Amino acid sequence: MVVDTAVEYQLLGEENVHRGIAKNLSGKGMMIIADQDLQPGTQLKIKLVPGNSITPPMQAQLKVIRCHQQDDGAYQLACEIIQID
Image (tube, rainbow, N blue to C red):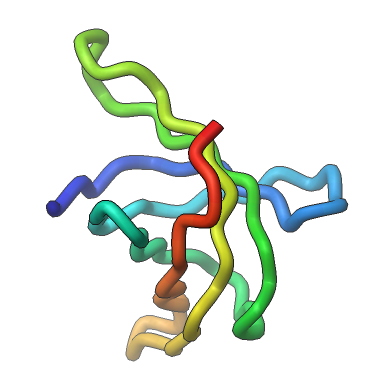
């Protein structure tokens, strides 16, 4: 499902909050556009806040499966959903 929604994420064990765009979401994974090159296996805590008040925010833990740099310099993070909080 295409979501194109802002997402906040933290690398597990770190306090810095980064921002990206969640491009799509499925029952098992999420694609995030970010400004960081993250290695496969990196775990993230995310907070996805939809742009409307009908849909509640989603918080989850993800694991990066692959990372690909786009032509514009941003990175596509293909992530597996490990746990939904």
